Structure formats: C-alpha cells, structure tokens
Amino acid sequence: MNLNACRFTFLLLVISLGSQLSGCFGTSPPTRFYTLSSPEIPTGPTQAGLDVVLRVGPLTFPEYLDRRQIVSRSGQNGIALAEFDQWSGPLEDEVTRVLVAGIAEKLASPRIAVLSGKFSGYPDTVKWYRIPVKVIRFDGFRGGTVALSVVWGIIEKRDMHEKHLFTRESTITEAVAGNSYEALVAAMGRAAGKLAREMADHLAALIPK
Image (cartoon, rainbow, N blue to C red; front, side, top):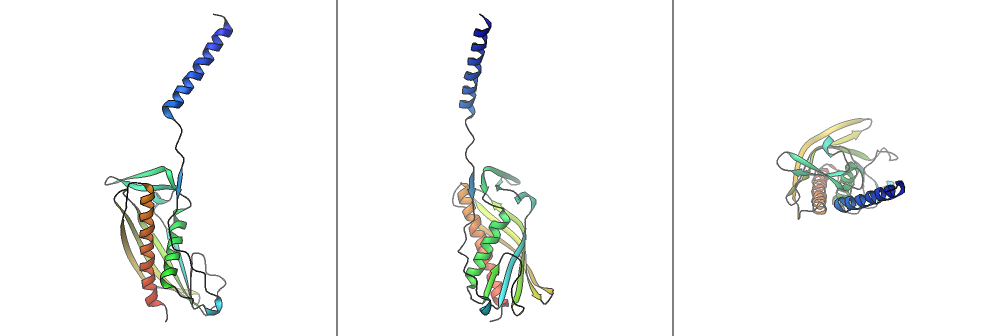
C-alpha cells in the first residue's frame, strides 16, 4: 500500500472513531435558568404622601449557596449542585426581590415605600427602617421539603443613628410538589413569600398608624 493510500485509510479511521465517540457521549443538555416567583411590586407612593421608608437588606448567604447552580440536599449531610439547572441571577437578588414585593403587598399602604437599595432622596420627615437578613439555610430535597432558616431584625434610623428594635430567628418549611428542579424552585419561592409576610406582620405593629 502506497503512502497516499495509508493516509486516506488513517483519515477514514479517525472520522469513524469520532462519529462513534459522539454517538456514545452525545451532547451536553441545555442549561435551564430559574427565578423565584413573587407578587407584582406596587407602584411606590409619592413623596408628598410618604410617611415610612423600609429598606430590605443587606442579605448575606452562607458560602455553599453563593453560586449560580441550584443547591439541593443529597442524603443526611450531602448537597448536590445542579450543573444544568441554575439561577437566572444572584440568589441574593432573587430573595430580596421576593421579600420587597411580599412586604409591600402585605402592608399595601400609599404611606409606605419598600426598597431594596439605599436610602436616598427622601425628606427628613419620614421614618426609616432597615431589615438586615442573614440566611443560614435555603435548600431542600427534591420530592421532599424546602427549609429557609434566617436571622433577621428591624433597625430604626433616627437622625444619623440607628436603633436595633429586635432580632428574630425564623425557620420556614415548604413541601416540594415533585422531583423536578422547577418544583424545588417553586417551593423555595413560597417559603420566601411566607418570610416576607411574617416580616410585614412585625413591621405593621411598629409603623405609626
């Protein structure tokens, strides 16, 4: 067999092997992105009728949750990272959005503004409150339950000083209606919504009538 024939035969073998490997391993599945569901954030009140400004944050998360992959429980002590099921944005932003929307919906007052950013541009006559949140755990078992454990508080800002009104630990569980990541994320959204309503109940007792 001459040299050209050998090269041709070798090329055919390479092409054939590549096709077989492609058939064995296939292609990677597409990545699916998720977001937590929340109520519509009401239109903010005008400054003329504004009495109270609430700022949700900052939120802090444990290192194991500081990632785009959705984290679920695996066994008693293990966790699993979903390489192809990820958050559409930072989890901090997702949870903050749900808390802001849930608190605003529950309080539902034209006198109250609920924000996720810094206090700015508001008159000195309004009362300001800040709600820091430390997330301890936010994950669950697919087909099982989700657990949201946090330490949070309410801080009143007076002039240039802040006064801690109280600190509270909250743990919320929610059943996951299925084995999919979509069902897991839906349960996480419901748990965050329950936390928002719990916060709103405490805030309602503090805000001047």
